[in-house]
Amino acid sequence: MAKIRIPTPLRKFTGGAEEVAAEGSTVSQIVADMESRYPGIKERLCEPDGRVRRFVNIYVNGDDIRFLQNLDTTVGSNDELSIVPAIAGGL
Amino acid sequence: MSTVIGLKCRECGADYPKVAAHVCETCFGPLEVVYDYKAVVRSMTREAIESRPRNLWRYRELLPIEGEPTVGLHSGFTPLVRADRLARALGVRELWVKDDSVNHPTFSYKDRVVSVSISKAVEFGFDTVSCASTGNLANSVSAHAARAGLACYVFIPHDLEKGKVIGSAIYGPRVVAIQGNYDDVNRLCSEIADKYSWAFVNVNIRPYYTEGAKTYGFEIAEQLGWHLPKHVVIPTAGGTILPKVAKAFKELREIGLVSDPMPAIYSAQAAGCAPVIHALHRGADLIIPVKPATIAKSIAIGNPADGYYVLKAVRETGGWGEAATDAEIVDAIRLLARTEGIFTEPAGGTTVAVTKKLVEQGRIPRNESIVVCVTGNGYKTLEAVDGAVEQPFTIGSRLADFDALFARLGDVPTPRAAIQ
Image 1 (cartoon, chains in turn purple, yellow):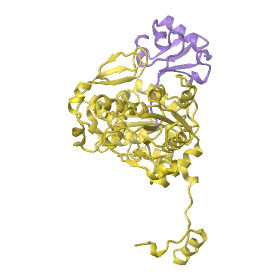
Image 2 (image 1 turned 45 degrees about the vertical axis):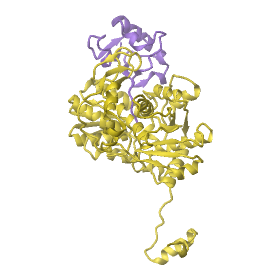
Image 3 (image 1 turned 120 degrees about the horizontal axis):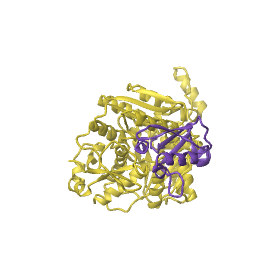
Image 4 (image 1 turned 120 degrees about the vertical axis):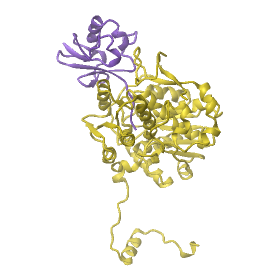
């Protein structure tokens, strides 16, 4: 199963766990599996139409899924996902 | 005498108390400080402001700290320079440069946001401050942390200009260079901030940090005699400063310190990293991240967290935006230096180059007041213009050596009679 790093604002869904495991061969299947294990979490990640929320970044092994195939990005059983809120900076 | 009510999510409107948090737990939207403007109006008059020391804390009713500031007592109130020679070069009537290349103590706009965020971190009781940075922020956090006696870790991309790296290290922080670009640094810092109990100025302290950027806008208005210009051109990286300068103008109008209409606000990005400009030109809300490739490293952020708010402010004010190529950026750095005697980093070159472009396109009319926002100093990024300036002429120390050189250069001699 893939490992998923959970940011602080979502840990109330995971019983405080910083890292969880979920099954699936794409990001969207992983999100669906997480929802079955931790009900309510999907709504925090995705808009009602299913797209990832504007201020949520999802990475597979450190790569932003928007540079890959978004929710269709394939995930192997040893891969690591990170969910990270958008943060600002620069100049 | 706090005027701060609390924090509010900019997306869903959920309310939060004044805590060290930056993300809405419900929708992940950014949190923003909410003020009691009725309380602000009571003490923040033009006379009161003008009687205060010339630093950014003169606007403290609209800055989110509770007690007295601990750092930044010499930051802000940078020159607003009337730039007539640059104006002639661009073919416009009234041009001003808001010059944060001489901000105290680390020569960039970042001394504003860091003054506020570290003063706030001290109020929260943190003993360690940190940041994800493209260079200037790391410089500023390092310097202010030293001044406040706090431990400090700064995280930067591995390929920054030497001036930006040493410009942090000299203050004694831990400098951590990440093998990746700024967006990689940002992601890592978000995870570190979750695990270590530090004040990351642009992560968990971000709602307070971004408020400091408003002082750039407050100063423009005050320095124009409590007037707003017609047009303001601002660089865009993560998207903090542009929406916050817009907010500053709105707040001044709200509390009655200025009565002019809102200026049109324009975003400037480097062509090698222009995700916000692409969305603006497409008419889209969705910002597609890019992999940065530009000499303007301080604004090389491919995944701008607040880019959406840049688009919103630009559209609401009737502004626009453009991107400048690396060659245009270098030309503009030279142009600003040679017309106004101001040496800016590539981010400032980007803003000048984009201003030129917008004037040429007719987007900015030639006969209305324009403020160009110069946010950083060229002495930190010498590499960017190293090949673009004349090399020194090395000669012997005899007068004949110089006479020979002068003859070879073919410059016109000044007649003695011309000198009084």
